[in-house]
Length: 282
Image 1 (cartoon, rainbow, N blue to C red):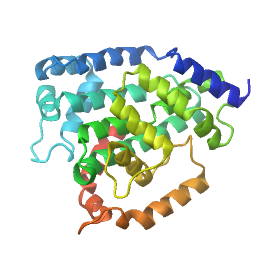
Image 2 (cartoon, helix red, strand yellow; image 1 turned 90 degrees about the vertical axis):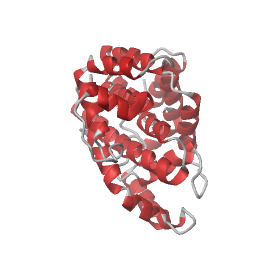
Image 3 (tube, helix red, strand yellow; image 1 turned 45 degrees about the horizontal axis):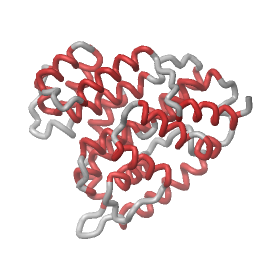
């Protein structure tokens, strides 16, 4: 099977909802569904988080990050962490766990390296999205964080299946962009029951068109993706990365009207971005 046929095969199965997930992803999906229940309150959420040591540690760490701990008061209990974050932000924490678990079965060193870079890119986009939403576009910051975490989930799914199709990733990045990214991404997002508003924002990222100055959730995600210093290993060649970074650097100060430039806003929020990024990456 050639590369294009392999992309089409994976995309077709994703479109039918025929997706293969590691066992730990299925467990995390059940937790995500429980948190999505409108009747799931803080106490119930805290008990669910406490049942998973890794999730509990990650939740406390994010609650103590500069992005969420604006008072400077460090907390040590899961219950207090959940109270500080709220159930919606907690869904983003679980989402980050799900995305990383998709790569947990990868054993090939080359694919592992791509998964590590893809997660670093994802973490940058998620952290930037949260800050840009709160300080620039004024869209819901919790939703922006979630969208940033989920925007490359199709790529993680592809990497989890790549060993089944030798040579799948040996071609040009454009092959993934044209024949796999959107079709596979939509299938995985639908399977994970990602809300339509978030799916729409991620679709804007695939289309690559945003307003200047940025206004919507899609604009927020696009801008964060443009500003992320680490590129996805799946859809950009080194030359394209250099062009994108140069373009972003030239346009950064003309994106936001009024007295503040985007660069000054991001410089002021750098501690928040770096703190959240550190927790997501490690």
